[in-house]
Length: 158
Image 1 (cartoon, one colour):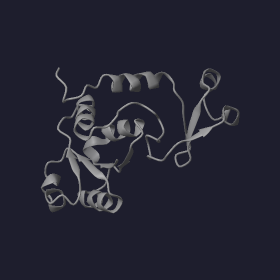
Image 2 (cartoon, one colour):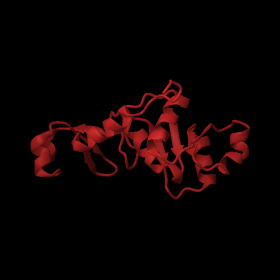
Image 3 (cartoon, helix red, strand yellow):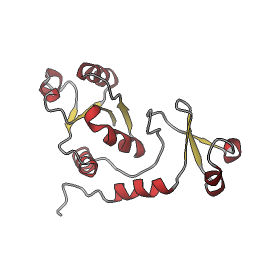
Image 4 (cartoon, one colour):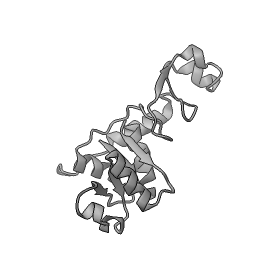
């Protein structure tokens, strides 16, 4: 499942990327650009913009869309999980900045490319060729994991 997110759901886009989903997010894209990209690449549009949903492409079903109802990230993730049946858990295989697939790199090859403490305490590293950015499972990973663990399925009783 592939997505394109509008400016109203940028944080949701990042978290879906953290779960391994292919999500295009261009924070200055117009509605027309989003629709064009969605059509060309067969993506589901994620938006909070109810006016956008009035467009013919969504009304006639030529482009799929999920209207995100809440402003809170946790509720957005719960909605996406419930309505689309997604598995949401961190797997960090995509760059959260550009969406590109990350590649595994050898620790020995990046000694001077990450902070010394990180190099000393971590064994596994991923790299984004486009952003020239390294990823590892530091303390932020626990926060991400806890966010995903806190999500309940909306279809299940509270």
